[in-house]
Length: 173
Image (cartoon, rainbow, N blue to C red; front, side, top):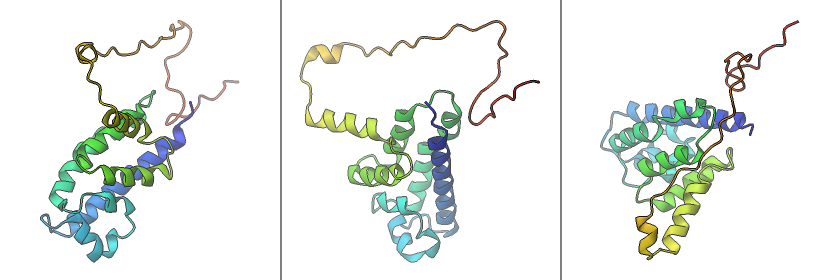
């Protein structure tokens, strides 16, 4: 799957989050609520995703939660196989725990650029809440990770990275 444009959009979003964090830190008001500062500070007006946060979240809390929510993103976005659920779940767990309405608003914002973002996470949780399982065998049975087939390594192929962010190798003449 060619997801390099989605990865690019998520990196740009991460940049926006860091820029918003910088603007909030620049206010030197760690105990002020982010919602209150959005109304006061012109520099925060274009960060639409900040409006999805819990109304009482302070700048200090936002700083702590952003560090946890996005710390793994740069490495995860450079992995050969993109773990979409992990990208979304760290943000949901760290920034929107106890704020499902805010999470839905945030997902809608990110999905304007990355259509699949958060879809697996929100669907799983909504179904889990709507249809709780009371079967004891479900709880006792461990969840097994899917087995992925690993293609054999060819001896005559150089071990080089291909595709985004690495340029495609140029044919040798």
